Length: 140
Image (cartoon, rainbow, N blue to C red; front, side, top):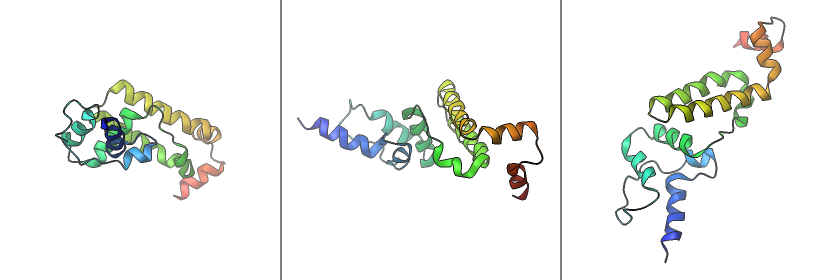
């Protein structure tokens, strides 16, 4: 029976969980598929139906399907991206995602930044004036 194959194909289309980017690029528009009423992917279709803001749908799918959101691709922007990341998690929280799960993901993301750039965060927290990062942040 081909329903397993169909499930695999449509799971990749509706919510590809192979990476955060793949989930973001998944389809957030398809709202129903009448042939499968008892389908395990119905929650994805329900998310698509629930909101016309497809970026918000993508955020909700990422929160639901990725226990660890790898922040390493954002390290090149140093600490400037941390407030953006925190705001992104606040958006997920405001959208109705489970507060405990969102907060865990947010703390994990912040930890990744602190772990990757400990001296930057120590310098910022101590208010050191002579560090390179302070000068860099002042210029921007």
